[in-house]
Length: 71
Image (tube, helix red, strand yellow):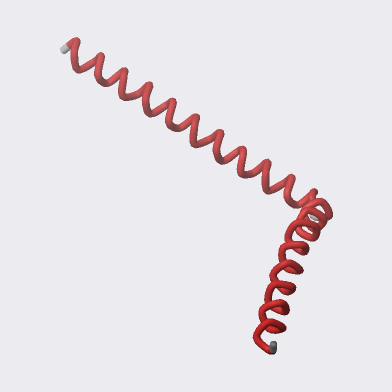
């Protein structure tokens, strides 16, 4: 009987943890929305700069390839 109580206690703790994750985390993220908005903007800016760098590098490689073919 003692083992059954321990198992139920562990299951209860796990369910409580899941409840906190499902309910608490979105509330905290909403409360910190301004900070996350700034971080999201910076992350988006970094991704855009990386994409721009890749496009410039591909364009450079194409130009160098055309130049090599014309020689």
